[in-house]
Image (cartoon, rainbow, N blue to C red):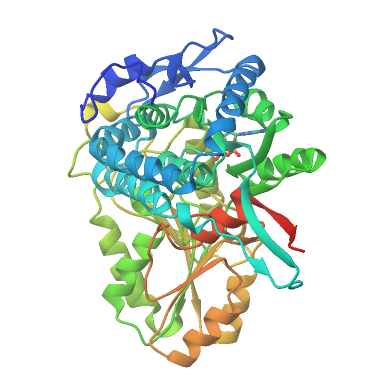
Length: 503
Ligand code: ADP
């Protein structure tokens, strides 16, 4: 068991800024927070104020080499530890992470601008639960026996792949970390994770906590940009698998390089998820579901956001009125304040991108932008990256706003009258991550779940990613699944066939 370089006892809760001082300019290798060889850093901002909250280490190719070699060394023992023992250690990580949930949630809120109550506290809980869930699955790493011949014993076993490179985005940094790290570790791999530039600290702190339980090198963390640090991890000859969450463009780039090395990839990419609302539903319930599903409380920064909402013509006007009323009641403000529902956009780049899409919508003839809620009036937030949630009417499904992933609090509400046609419109997208259907008509529901082209189709509800449920997209939304037992077996192990001659 390695000792944390923080020297703090588990359960200690610190304020986010003092935690960041402790994590500042560091990467985590061999169980220790260390400075990168590169000596380079980059600033990390609080999106709600644009204050610099700390410096993150910019890991060079040499630092990536250090991290991968450390994980490679640790692999030798970790892969041979009993699977149940590895699971037990990963479960213990879940317990300890739960003790630190509030601290991690606050840290995540400070660096991402997500509201503490509606987002970060919820995510911190799913984070520790995911470690617990996978921790219980050590003995599920089973193989098969094959009755090839009575004179032979033929069986398969599952072995780890080796060192896994995990590259994640900033929108749900802890959730993404857990979906990659927990199954990889239980399956006997070791992991080097690269955090997103915008949100390096919660991941680094979580890894520091985990490293008080796991042997050194089993989980290493680096930070840095995509082209330097991320690419060096992807290209490294001893990285046996890449698991990635981010944009479609980067996913394709990673796929290309991984194919040259002939290593497997899991890619969780974007979405432009449709929601279809039929005429037979309970309107208030559906409006709440639509607002939750559009992830307005995460400023729409979600791959599964319901960014195309198709409402039956007969309900359209009533739906719009109630949608507007409920959206107006959400409070935008200081993300750390427990009264706040909606926080800030992650970065100036994303902020501008979202406003550009809103302008494109606004200048489209016939389109109406319904801007809701209100910008915060707190003077300390004047430089914050806030955007009012907006829904458009008068846009068709073929409009740019309905085709491209905006990753902001922007959705289009489109009337429909023919079920076959609305299913076609829902499927008319490059993406296929998630879809939702609201109806009490069993026949329609069955037709919808069969015909909707998405990796996750929900009827009359919108649960977020849950440990146990396979999650992953069709079409340009990605390759492979996460969050489930199958995800661990299919994406973090390789099968070996063994034949004993019994004669
Ligand atoms: P986003 O627009 O959401 O930031 P990206 O795909 O650019 O999406 O980034 C997601 C993650 O991928 C980040 O950790 C980023 O640093 C990393 N990344 C970006 N480009 C590359 C690349 N060429 N190789 C490896 N990782 C990359």
